[in-house]
Length: 303
Image (cartoon, rainbow, N blue to C red; front, side):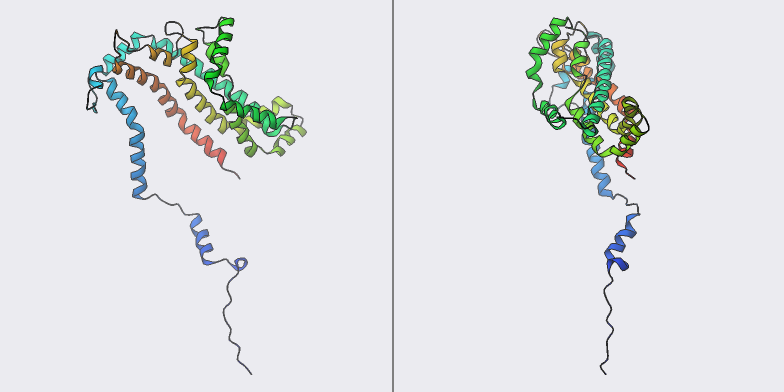
């Protein structure tokens, strides 16, 4: 009788999985620590990112002649507070700061509100022509804003809004990018079953938006609000046309008339004004950055 040799059989995935699979599952819950090279690269990226801000402070602490000399100064000088005082008084930086805060806040709030409503409609409400209308909205982002300056200025002139803040706020109440951004977020983050359940419970449209759509869209709304706020704060082209430095200027319009002399421009004073306009944004990021990042992380985690 022939002797039968018992050879080991390969383990099937259902019986226990392969060795690499087991190692992967064992290491899945481990916390991986970054190596020294990672910290070196992160520190280098931080230095490169912060250097322009640092040199802005350095340039604001020197005279205009020293700023344009070669080699450029790399250490702070003694004229920072003198330049800050001169820049603040040469143009009405206080009024410009208040105007910019009002304009940026109104534009950010209105853009987030209208973009969320429109994004919800394009994402979850079935209606005829939805795809075509969304395509038209996205197509408007390809049109250069310079093409609409002349008709927009004529409208502002006819309404008597020249040198008024509403001439800057109203044309920016909603943005095509915001609508597309919120639509893309709500398509994945908001289940249609959640909206249907609210409808079955007797909730009307406004209640669905307030209690269902806004809580789900809060992380994207925070990100969009920050992006729009920064963009409106730094906007120069249209405010420079609609406003004047002697009337109701925003910060960027006020900076256009800063440091101007008879035949030259004091670059140190200009950079000092740029430093003044940057500090409020840094404060906003310092106080709200953690909440925005936390909102993004909470919105990215799915059960």
